[in-house]
Image (cartoon, rainbow, N blue to C red):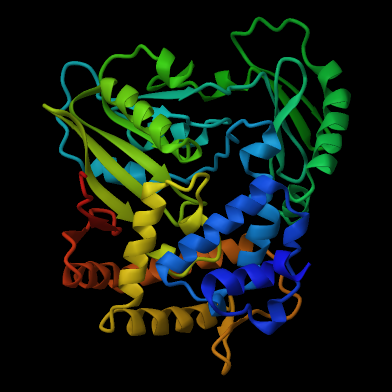
Length: 432
């Protein structure tokens, strides 16, 4: 029905229609109710951020119609998907490295809360901060990890049930991401083939591996990641008993909870902090499109010290700037209003958008046509090369001092804003 189509929904919320060449490419009525609700929240946040329907493009629609519906908790029986990628939190590691934190007799403690599995972000942090003691915490460390020959992997529990799968960078990996049933069958067949090949003398203290035809099944994989400055705790937040930490990072976790539960979790995390310690909370994509609140523990408890966002939230290909699971996501709402402020600033936005268009063409990602719309090459498909080019594009935008321009625009609008130590835009959040 017309009133149920994505085209009609975009026009209703944003006030303008989708570009003609993108109409009818997104079958909204076929999505699960939880995915439809996500899309409605996304469009509402787009409207608040001043985002125009003319900026829609095939990549964004692929995220909305394929990727997002397959990473929401509803796909995984209500569980938060343990998405993790190497290098995803590099900027956060760099940020912590710039902090003036004096070590005592014992190494400073860094807790990666909800580190995901395999715990690649915790491994990165332990390597980048060798003088810290890093503790990776998650309630979903599974018994098995199964890697296939295309770079995809699946987490499988002790009952031999697939809990989650993640695609690799290849085209075959991206294709499997849009078909959970096919993925379940694929990994189920591989597990049945490889599990009999595992060593029989498993003691739980070391990992065991079985390999065949480029596929690899690992039991007790968590043991492979432990080092002198990296340990792991399988527990929920309310169950943790740890020495006071100087830094706690909790990325891509609290976004899944409603406002009241989130407040309770913040209080619980605050109790694990040392005096003047910081709690880093937020969401990000593949080392991109981050929005973060940094809380500090003072004499009166935990308070928000700064809200930080990366420049690529202003011209994204993914939906991370508008990723929200609940209507009352305060960080997503704040980012939307800050984005709208920047789009409305006549001294910042024209130069920013002009340079972005130039780099999109220079990096051969897409090109803005005479009609004002973004056009992609014929036969375009998502690939690791595309994401790599996009990453380098935003590195170039950061080098050209647009973060400083953004802070000045926000200051003109009355915000206390600055560029932080790793080149992102920061504002002093309200404590109301």
